[in-house]
Image (cartoon, rainbow, N blue to C red; front, side):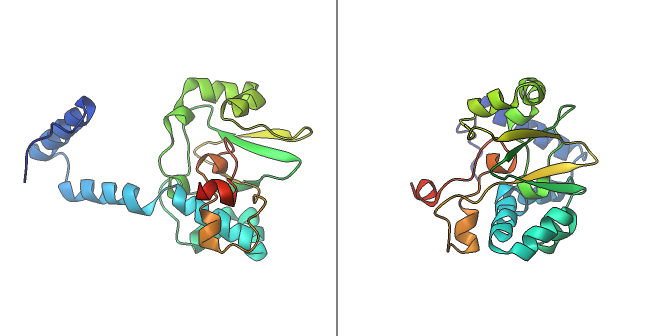
Length: 202
């Protein structure tokens, strides 16, 4: 195996060195590290959330179950794990757009969204999302029709929110896999909208 790490940036080199040191001193089990990496590379993340949304768009019974008991509905698709407890799904409608923030830290539903993006953890987003949600949405490129109210949900360790975005026009007749391609991470936080089939294909 080559030991040339010249392709790594300085931070990655530091992380690699720290990991090596922790393993050598016996503080970290390499198998546990591999399991963690595998989890976040393949088992959790926004693709799971997109499948939840696609199923809700395609199956009215699942949608009803999701809105009634998100934990059970999401678990029925196999998406469970740490930070995935106490889920609540809020639905965007023509009258209401939902935006999720964690004002205290960065509580986030890992099994369906993965790790939170940097901006979600920033003090600027956490403070401004509750004071000026329309302005924050505009900075994300989201302009809502006149008359649409914005409701902000504050995630905590006890309750984590997932936004069910509106199904975009032109998505009629698509199967669940194709529907999932229209769902973005940001749309499930409320900082974005689901994309149209033509946008997804571009």
